[in-house]
Length: 311
Image 1 (tube, rainbow, N blue to C red):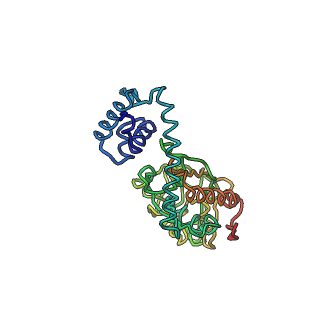
Image 2 (cartoon, rainbow, N blue to C red; image 1 turned 60 degrees about the vertical axis):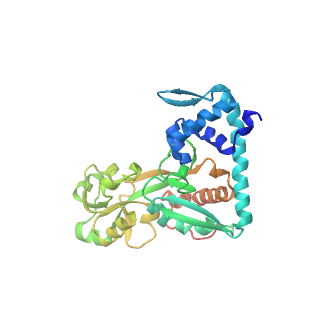
Image 3 (cartoon, rainbow, N blue to C red; image 1 turned 120 degrees about the horizontal axis):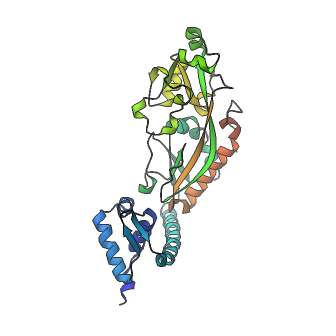
């Protein structure tokens, strides 16, 4: 029996993941194997193929030029394997296909939860799981299917694209205005109180928007929850810097210095490279992007009310 015929799909997946990650350790983490196991199996695969697949150095591991042709074939096999897995799952359980979306609390509760019906439109067998998490989730470990954030993770094995942009304003309440008045200029902000995040608990730098408008804010209340910050601002505890999908839509808050204080953040959608091949995930991702495009004016602060009409 030719030695090459002893190769399995798991062997080929291992080769592909090592090439993607450029590191045996990172590939081992993705594959959920020990570093030594990946090293040993890779050596065995190279023995069966009777050729070296990678060049190793202190900077990591890189596929050799002659390996690229083999990797092209493995990538095509991966596409078919993912499609086959989805089809077999559809046959064994035709009722429900679950897609998990992970993102920050405000984006999850303030926007996506209000757009679930539009995102899943035309997909009666789709169940969406919305996972609110302040930390960066690991798509490569399949902790989630789709990750939305204010930054591009730029990680090997992920496919990311910008799907929208969000405006962020300074908000205050009538109660706060009664107690402390309102700033008339950006220079007046140093004399006012704010609500914000607990600094040492911030894991995503792109939400440090308060520090972008004032270097040393006088914070009277802080929380790792942006919804708690909004509620505190509504009570008059302080001014709050909030994305429009958190700050708009209630009678208690209004924009303060709207012409002078405006920040924007891009919204990035990331999917595992193998996961994007699955129909349910692709349709859900397309639905998310369509929702962001349809709500563009609201998300940029050009409209103050989110249109609830189903698109």
